[in-house]
Length: 113
Figure (cartoon, rainbow, N blue to C red):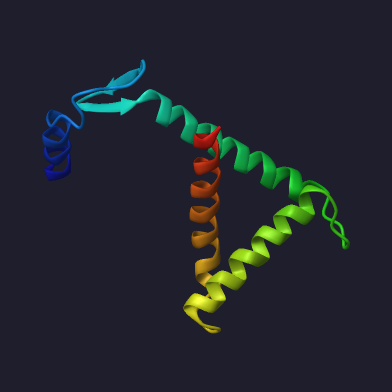
């Protein structure tokens, strides 16, 4: 219940007195969602799911195309986690760190477009 009260307080504070462009908002209960950000986040999730399914649809010993790209991304994230967390503790964190990294990376690129 305290979380809902905190959200009500945050919704009552103006974040900016000037908005550039037209934006649409959705109200769900007492929560106001920025429609464009919400939709863009779901589009990014869909892109990542489709890319993952396409990369794992026909797995081959010698990767090619999107499988090669996704394996490169996985190796990059695995090595990043291994260097930061250590040789013994990195394995359980790779899926979490990889998911966050890819979501933020693709979200930033979608915002640049």
